[in-house]
Length: 91
Image (cartoon, rainbow, N blue to C red):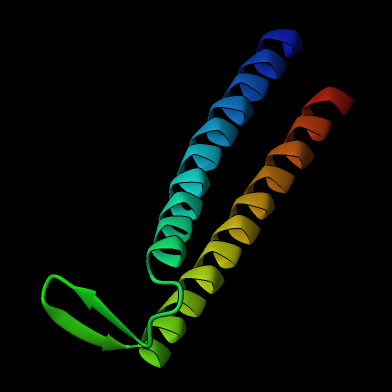
C-alpha cells in the first residue's frame, strides 16, 4: 500500500513541479521580452501610456520578489509532503 501512496505523491510532486516550471518560464519570458523591448529607453510606452523608467523598475523588482516568495512557499509545501511521506514509510 505504501508503494501506491509513494507513487501518487511522486506523481503529484512531478505535476506541481511541471506547473511551477511553466509559470516561472512565463514570468521569465515576460521579463525578458520587456527588457529586450525597452533597452536604452528612459520612457516606456505601453498602450499610449507613459511610465517613468523608475516606476517600471520598481514594478519589475516587486514582480521578482513575488516570484521569490512564491518559490519559497512552494518549497515549504514540498518539504511538508516529504516529511509526511517519511512518516508514512516509517510506520
